[in-house]
Length: 178
Image 1 (tube, one colour):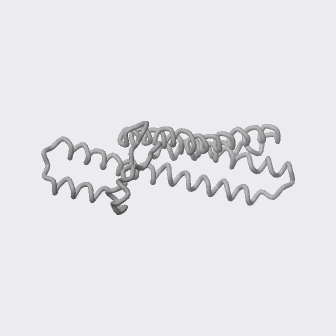
Image 2 (tube, helix red, strand yellow; image 1 turned 45 degrees about the vertical axis):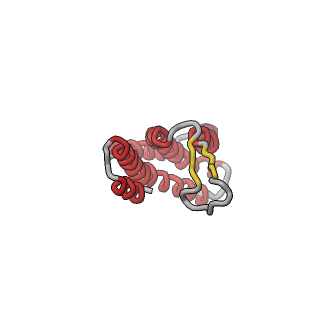
Image 3 (tube, helix red, strand yellow; image 1 turned 180 degrees about the vertical axis):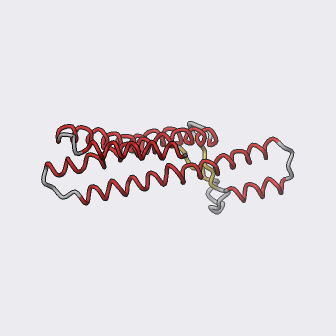
């Protein structure tokens, strides 16, 4: 909401205003910590946490049947799909906030870092700015929208299991939300 946006703008302003006063050594340290946090969280979330929580395998039907959508089934080994989705809906906002803060710090430290080394600043600034823009799109629009859809799907599945709905109604809901 508006508080998140205001906090990110304030952080960006404070970092940008203080970046000229930072020494090259402090700028290198802040930039390294921000980049390490960004890269480390990406690697951990992508290759360790996500695969551990979701680890799926595909079970095939007998070989004589044709491969259709119904002959392949996915099984979640470690967490049920709905629990995995709810866990991700709590983790991803924190993940995107960490990335936004890391990118803001990186943007604030690029100028003193690269000007001290007499290197061109445009490419790192553009890369970090594009990363921040896409992270903000993820944080403020895509993640809340996908979480809302996921929670609606979970509610629909729970509803179809609880109520004595007709088979046609259940099939229609499944077709609509797959």
